[in-house]
Structure formats: C-alpha cells, structure tokens
Length: 401
Ligand SMILES: Cc1ncc(COP(=O)(O)O)c(C=O)c1O
Image (tube, rainbow, N blue to C red; front, side, top):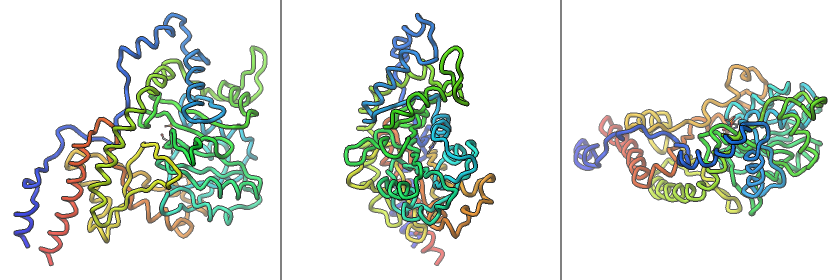
C-alpha cells in the first residue's frame, strides 16, 4: 500500500507546492486609477461630493437597465438598503418575518433592527434557499412578511413564495446581495417580491467599494425610499419620515459606473474558471457541484461545492484546513447558521429539529476562490490539491487498515 502513496501520487510527483501568494476567495474588480481620476474630475470641479449628485443619478439609471427593473434606489451599503426596505414596508412593530438561517448576518439583523422578530424556516437541499413548501406552516396571525435570500445567486422559488404571501397578505422582500444580474426566464431577479436588495460590497462581482441598491416595481416606494434614505427630509422645512443616512456618495458612484464596464469581461473569465472547476471536481466522488435551474442565469458571484464526508473520505473542515496549508483560503459560507448566533439561538424556530437541512448543509458547503484574476491554471491547481487531499486520506486509511 505504501508503494501507491510514494510511487503514484506523493506531493512531489504531482507537482504540488503551496501558492507563493495567498489565494483568497475573491479579489475586487478595480478600474485604473487614471480612469477613476478622469471620472472624478467633474465631482472635484463642482465640489458636489454627495447628496444625490450627478453620478449617483447616472448610476441609478444605468442599473435600471442592467438589472432589467423599473426602479432603483442606490444606498451607501446593502445593509442600510435592506434596513430601509423593511422600514418602507411599514410592518407592524414586533410582527414576525419568516426568513432563512442560511445567510449572512445582515439579513437577519435587519429584521431585528427594525423591531421585528425573525422566524427561521428550513432551506431546500439543492438550491439552499428558503424552502417555500415549509413557509406556510410557520405563518400565524403575527406574521407580516417573508424575507428570502437568493443565496450564491440561486433564485428562491419566487412563484411559490408569492402564492403563500398572497394567501396571507404578507409582504415579500428579497435579499439579492449575491444575485447581481441573475435572471429567471430572462426577467431580472429584482422584479420579484415587493422590494429586493443588491449589495455592492467589494467582495461582490459588481461593487462600489461599499454600496447597495433596492429595486422595486411599485412607484409608491420612490418618494418613500428617497426620504427614508435621507433622514426623512422632504424639503428645507419638512421632515416626513424617521429616516436614516443611506446616501451613496459620488466617489462610490464613480467606481460603480466604471466597474459596470468591466463586469462583462470579468464574467467571461469566471466562466472559464467555472468550467475548469467543473471539469475536474465532477470526477471526484463525494463532491456535489451547485446546479443552476435551466431557466435561471448564474450571476457568477460564487463557486460552491458540497462535500459529503462519507463519500469523499475527508470532511469539509479538513479540506478547508488542508487548503490553507497550500495558501488557499476558501470560505465556509454559511457556517455557522444565523440561528446559532447568540442573539437568535434562543428563538423557538432556531431549534435543530426545525432546521434539519440547514444544519446538515452548513457542514458541507465550501466556497472556492472565484475571480477572473485567479486564471484557469491556478483553478486547475486548486482542483489538483483537493484531489490530492482526497487521495492522501484514502491511502492513509488503507495503510492503517
Ligand atoms: C446575503 C447578504 N446579505 C446582506 C449583505 C450585506 O451587504 P453589505 O455588505 O453591502 O452591507 C451581504 C454581504 O455583504 C450578504 O452576503
């Protein structure tokens, strides 16, 4: 047995050594400094740095086209945008919002910060989005809304969710932080529900360093969101809402406008990396690759695998740790679940019996490095390392037997 290890696949014979530089999960797109300076010339001349400037307006108009939605309001980050969306819906204080535990903390915090109660619903095993079939059993007279997350850009079951919402007169909000330009049957994902939020954080495919936006079809929210985003100020003498400061500044908007021109090429590069990952990893037993339903588009934000420890031979955590030894920093999105966080773990809906699928999947998911600059060769090397981790374990198990 030991011969197999030394002759066939020891580290040296497969040419594996750690990357010289750390490989992170993503690297932000950046325009050239010259382009940024050029774009900011007008801002410097006018000295109009924030408060709904020209670039802010231009970005909103362009995003309506890119996201294929009727209305867009940009914000200084996605969290403030989501906080404001929930506020704009005027949900009764203390009412319940049904959501997923399999998300970034901001999703659930925005519910709680609005004086609302999060109620966790389990997730669907393939898309890992909120399980639309399990929402109805959580609805009661205190329920006011459903907050779904298009996690990794995989769309929630928007039709089923809307059906439940219509039956019980609930609002629907989507956290589309991961789903920039995702579509269902050619329709922009920001058209579903009452309001959707996109994050433009630097880790996202499209970013403004920090930033975000809301999209919505109902024009009644245009003014409401405008006031809420700016302290509730309507004019010099009237303050009509309990608003916040959610405005995007002109420097953020400039970066966004420049980055909009870069995302097409970036997506093509990521497509190539995705195909390298799929080609190699699909061959390994115990790894499940994420599949986007046929009628949806991948927004190319994440490359996620699920590891079945029994079949793969090594746990997700061991792969994560072993990759670090090769200078590769994958991420365990989303481990732990939001239902395990200190402020939420005592909720009735946080019990593991209520969330069996989410509690299984949180130990299986791993996000691999995914950005254009990674290149196909490095993606191939990461696959080789993962294959080696599996093989090394197989051999050591056989040797010890
Ligand atoms: C699912 C999800 N929701 C909300 C947010 C918060 O967005 P932001 O960082 O723009 O405030 C993020 C992360 O950035 C996220 O991944």
